[in-house]
Amino acid sequence: MFGLLLAIRVTTQNSSENLPNLVGSELENFVKAPGKSVVFFGIDYPQNIEYANYGIFKNKDSIRFCTAPANESEKFNVKTKSVIAFENGEIINSPFKAETSGLFLRWLNFIKNSQNYQVKTSGELKGLFNMEINTIFGVGIQTIPKEYATQSVFLVSPSLFKEIGLPDVESGLYLYRSCDRQLLQIKSSVEEISKCDVDSYNQSLIKTKPFVATYIVDVNDTESAEKMYSKLGYLKSKFGEKLFALALPREYIAPTLRQLKLESVLQPFFLIKNTTSRTERYFQTLEDGDIFDIKYIENYVAKVLNGELEPTPLSKAESQLNNYGPLKEVTRKSFKNLVLDSKNNTLVAVTAPWCGHCKRLKPVLNATAHVLHGTPNMLYVYDDDANDKPSEFPEIDGYPTLLLWNGTSPKPMQFEGSRNMKTIIEFLHNNTVIPFDIPEYNETEILGLYK
Image (cartoon, rainbow, N blue to C red; front, side, top):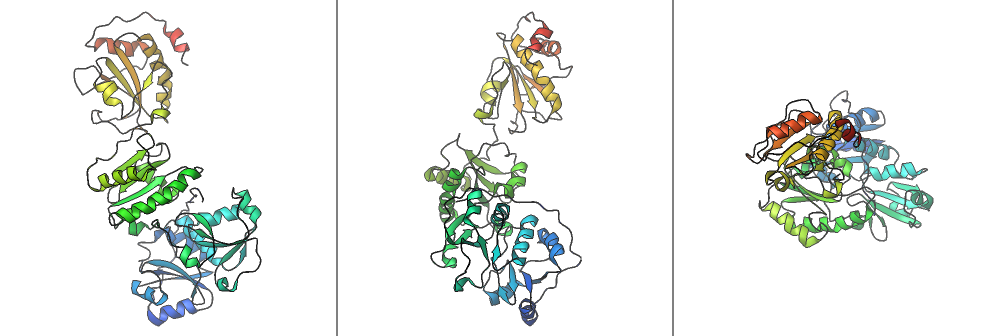
């Protein structure tokens, strides 16, 4: 079993001209001509395959490219929408399905070096796994069995597998199954062990169902990776009409995680996304429940699909909080209890981890909280990158923004003034509903404790 793999990004470059669209005998002659060719079946170029532009441009002198109507694929026993490589009229590899420019370029390099190729470095070996296509490896052998003579087989020394952390790969033929990233020894037909219970990554097909679900696990967390495949296969069998269940590298979904503000969520976590919305998402972490318990996750998925749950608000994990000083951290989940339901004056500094002004303000807030300890005042910091904003927040124009709830209204007062201890303490004193005396303090001395 392999952990999650890396995808690479390549800036696309427009091809110099549109690809020919071929049918009938023209298509047959095209793929039967000497050399290698790639056919986009049932896919409009360039509108729906922009990811391919750079790869086509880079390889147009060594590989021929064309498009063909979907019904032409029946002659070759392939899916109606497929990207297929041919050599002298014969299909020479698995269809390309990742739909990213970098992996398409790798796939084309694989096509150019098809048949028996000696893998010489561990970097090359890792690169083959990154391509997300089924791949046959001949480990520790020099002669390929006759039944695989027309297949692309990569010859690899067992020592290279040891270098990438797989010391138990013995000599023989293996299939790297891309759908769940397993390396399987070939003891029966390749077609039989190629079958996978988990959906393949196909962006256009994903959009045909209302939801897509996946586990987000760390690249080195092989234990979680092993757990997730059987769960996703079960979810596919149970909810397949409404849900795509995908196992895919985190890097494929990294832009989506940024868009959904989920980059900082502790892994592993289980994610369901509405395929028609840019922002609607539902997720569970290990702090919420046992996400690898199939009954727990089945019940959760059923509630999402039945419309019984609201989208999950993002709340920074308790284990990620820094609450060691007098200034405490409040999260989306703890906001109501610590702020709205509090009878104290509650000042919340809305910050972002990349904000330089916020970093400079933190010692001031710690020192202020230190001075006001024992008075009816609480100071909190709120990480706006790691939490969704509560509805009670006003629109935030910049960081840091200081908001005061004093128990009189769910709407806060916004601090406007110099961000120093004296001004902040006076702001709290002047707007409190619970009178308090300002303690005596030496600003330089107190600030020195927190810088």
